[in-house]
Amino acid sequence: MGTWGSGNFDDDTAADHLSDLTSRLIAEVTEAMAGDPSGIEPDDYWGVAVPCNLELLHLLARQNYVGAILPDPATIAAWKTRFLGVWDGAIDGLEPGPEYRAQRREVLVRTFDQLAELATSKS
Image (cartoon, rainbow, N blue to C red; front, side):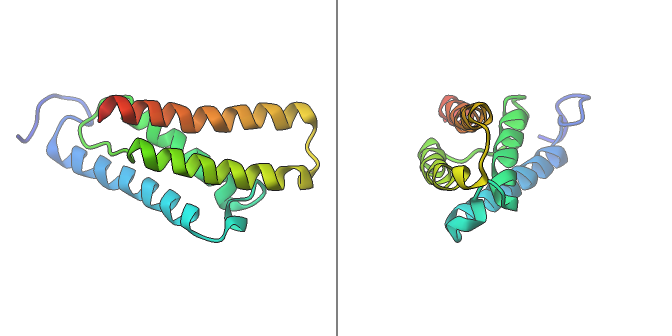
């Protein structure tokens, strides 16, 4: 197909690059979710980076660029269950304020849900 427009993501090379990028984001989340649960606790690197990766995937995929890859909705649902289970079990040990705790959990739920909704609409 080659080039189909003048935009930064309107050719085969850009689509390949975007596929590689989104695949790396998914691979990082997959690895974090398969590892030791302490690795995704709220004060651990992947406890912060996993939601960041999910939001980046959502932002990229909703642009409808060719090459953006998303995990399937069932995978996202399983990640959500695991991540929130770890988060719920660990967050109180960090002694957050009740308002922060509620707001942060709401953001986390929304992050997983919006990605799952987009993945469902694209499948």
